[in-house]
Length: 280
Image (cartoon, rainbow, N blue to C red):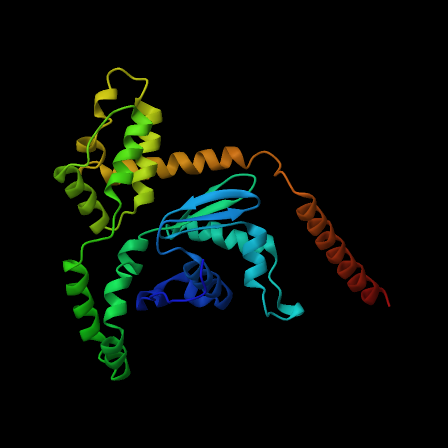
């Protein structure tokens, strides 16, 4: 992820629980700033990982390192505490997490609804800055709604249909009707990642069922009637799989093992120092 560019922050964050804790707010902003604005590939822990817009590749250790950059020793955040906050974000519906022994892919929920249309906003930056300077905030919100409504979301329709074909063995084409259904779901706040999750998990559920195979099609999977339910089912299945994957002890690299041991020894020394002071 580049350190250039910007993100948008909506005022309703003031009603969120993160607003009452400055460190949790900092963590949420860090996650937003690390998220990708477009399809990308990264090398993380020796493995190439592909991500879509609104996603980031990280791990508890890497995220803690970035969070603690520039922070005094007395105010360093513990890795376990920081990751508990990330899990709380997930439980609150702010993001989803898919983890394995090497890395985690964090997907920010409704990213396209809040952070999309970069080109449109960039082209209007000067006029927008002037409006903010004069504090015409309410008018800005209305103008943004009109702009976003008329702007076509940047969606890779073919990629979604190709993935459906690869998972099901079908040969669907990227027709106008299919593009229309995908576009409508994206406009409702769903992401390309949501389409991938629905396709993957419904394929696992229906592919070997003769009675349900026929429904592995755009007309059923991407419909307004079913897509929200299918997305929630896929997220629940992903969370269950994640719990199963993380039930085993994590595989640590030598560097991670050494870092964990050093952290443990530092905490022991601190504990012994406090006990010595209390016995004096």
